[in-house]
Image 1: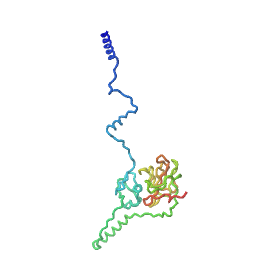
Image 2 (image 1 turned 120 degrees about the vertical axis):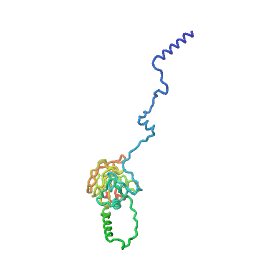
Image 3 (image 1 turned 180 degrees about the vertical axis):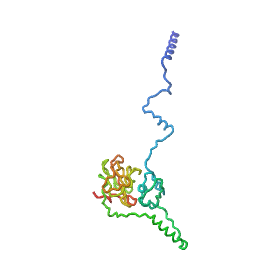
Image 4 (image 1 turned 90 degrees about the vertical axis):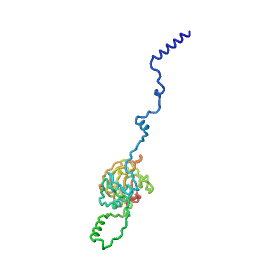
Length: 274
């Protein structure tokens, strides 16, 4: 009785071994996973410790630097705006005269040069002709600027666009100006007569930006525009359209600033009361 059972078990084992494949070893089985498997690139990134990089547009500002190397697309007015300086100071420090043309690669002083005192030279040893030439050279380096009376401008500029002021001027803010809400695509106009000295998006954090020069003392800026309808060198009249409103942080808004002698001032002082 025992022998037939043993024989039967042996025959059953042989049949099972011959029919199909057995289960794979545990380390070769594909186990279900609720999460999506990583891609080849992700696996390689994890294996090599690589990090995702984010490309940041614009130029980093080093306010401790004494010099600035002009980049493509820069203007003297943009550089002055970037460093909170008066453009005519930079022009004076670097001997740049109207129409304030600068070249890519040019090295500009952006800090006031130190004035060194020299001992007076005896008149006996100084040649008269040399004195005359030196005086002429000094006069040729003097940059003359038009003065403007701010008192006459008080509440005389039109508003740059229609809308509600959602952010007032704050001296402690990163961007010192007004934020005016409206609808994307609505008109943005020049607050006063002037010349377009910047119309681009090269200034970090301002989007499509327009800067208008009203005098050698006053500039106005219009940021986060959707489209720009003027170019550098254009002359505009008060109320003339220069752009269309864009958005910032998901809100349709225009950021507007005025700077006097390179420093931010409250635009409400210049805009007509409404």
